[in-house]
Length: 288
Image (cartoon, rainbow, N blue to C red; front, side, top):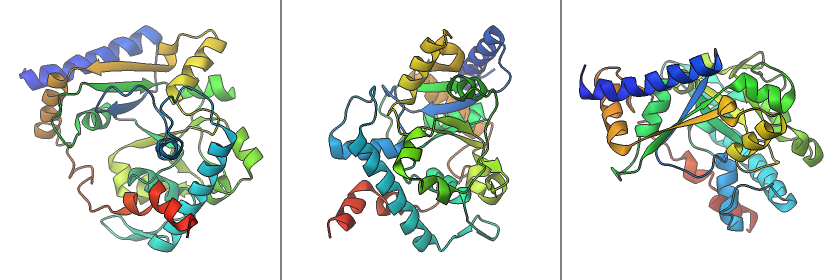
């Protein structure tokens, strides 16, 4: 066994030990390329810039909620004009509608209230490895039990699928939007078979946790849920810290042996959408 394969197998063994200890059957994974102190949605991160927020372990205030909702609607309206609700997935042109739009936004780095997860530990490990510079930062692999998360937060031990359109979801009035509870959801639903429509999402085995409008930090929310239900936090959300040297070896193994790289995950495609729909551009348009 090569050094790179040993580095990879060490993580797989830790996941197996975790699954056996807690009797897990369904797990999702998320890779982060440094030891971030919190886990906010991309929308929350963008909005926090305007308010100078550095402490995510608190509730989202009314003025911040209003800005998130307005910014989200601005993105939806602008994106629908920009893309004309048609996306080329590398094979053919297919219409984008409803939740397809949301998943497209998320996977191309446009701010949303959703946090990326994957059914594949290999995909998550690649994102833990992926970085612009070899900066020496340790990485972290997160493991979530989506069914248990939904049970603690919504009383339903299952993975949810959307039952209305994304447009309806975004355009809810503020009181209804605030009352929406965070939830782990699958891309596949009767209102949008996204996994087979968007090849980029399909290649990443993508799933999502809707973060809600109540708290910035998903980790903070889960710690409160676990405490209120007298459940060990690690049963819901568990993190494995991966030293820099090890994650570099794992990245080598993923590429050389498993064929997982930027091209395979369609991350090498041109993307100017993140800048186009940034919070800075939103503010410029609103202040015209």
